[in-house]
Length: 388
Image 1 (cartoon, one colour):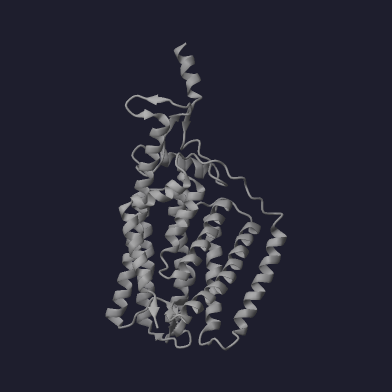
Image 2: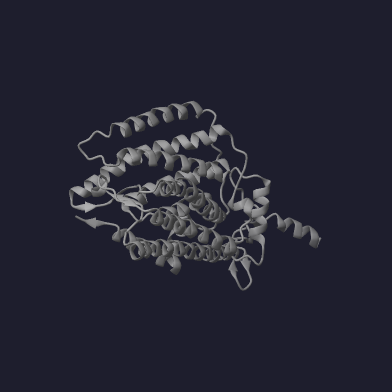
């Protein structure tokens, strides 16, 4: 009789880790993530079994639903701590790189071209380019290594690699390119508006070297290596880590982290929405290589458009850039229209979470490491603004 009552009560028990459904992820991903979350020695996995019946009292702990909220908040806070430390490491490298370039080479090099400087670019030496690119690569590798050692996320989780059709990848790339063209126009209008009130802002990223090998190394770093490492960090570790608290929250929070790496007002908005697109594409396809391909193509096209704009002033038509942008808009729109019927958007399933999205975002401000990083990022953004 006791065994029967036990089995009957088991119907009310919910294992939030084992019952969590991850969109478009296969059995291997789900199994690896579930085992990681249920590992008793893992402080970063939200795993909790509670009674789904209302007003169930747990002796010494209060009501079961309240205990579940407390458990999720504690796990979320620990994950915020790791994310905060990781971003502090990254911003420390960025600051050290800026100071080192000034101290060693006497040149302030961050890759950004200000609106007032777009026709007077300085050329950098092979040594300057090599130092700049090497430190940038080391920075991302260091943060990735820190996350890997600290979180111990299975590779199948932070490098999701479900089978995905070329049509879905093409769809994601086209959406990204359309966004890039529209955002580029908005960015141009924004920096021009600020310049009219004597505020000089970063216009685009473009570095010229007096050495062909230096230029090639810069192109390989910015157009290939950094995009891959960045996707592993933001759409790999951070996006996948916070999926245990809900996909919507994971997309928004990982996009905030990614966008704040670009210490410029216009680039913050650009990278946030672009990161949302990349994160959504990763979840919708279950494959991180979708976001890698989309990001690399967008970065490559952006570099070509920036090359068209080098040395071009306001009164010139920038004919090549305009033609390319119009061509991309027309072609990508046609492709998206054609592929629309082939792209099946899965229905969102409810996430096993006890906290609302707004409360999760507010909890970010309870993490000391996140607050310190946000303040430093804000300070860096303010320093990037020039008054002319």
